[in-house]
Image (cartoon, rainbow, N blue to C red):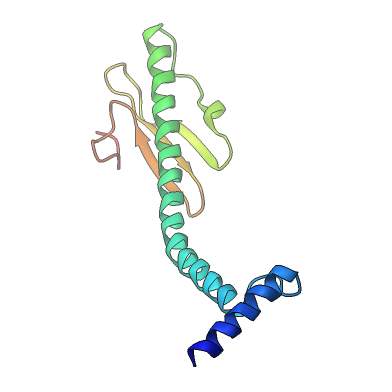
Length: 133
């Protein structure tokens, strides 16, 4: 039995060295496909969470930038500017909430599908859900 297996494997090795038997075996291909399937099953849910976090962070950045623009204008004695220039891509609206004062600025950023809303500025609550009254 041992001699038969040795001759069989020697024949396989010889065929591969001669160039007649090139490529991967069916077992090797099945194992690679199974490993790729497992990796994809793990990666897709993780990607969805990453994408949602990235969208929220983009809205937070737009709201924070809007609050900085408003604070700069108020510090120079000017009226609060339009924040339309901060709208880009899927961020559909960046607006000032209420009447801004230098010590209380609240900016709302809205965008993405499904629509998300984020508040920023020194008038927004710590949880970022709404501005103080």
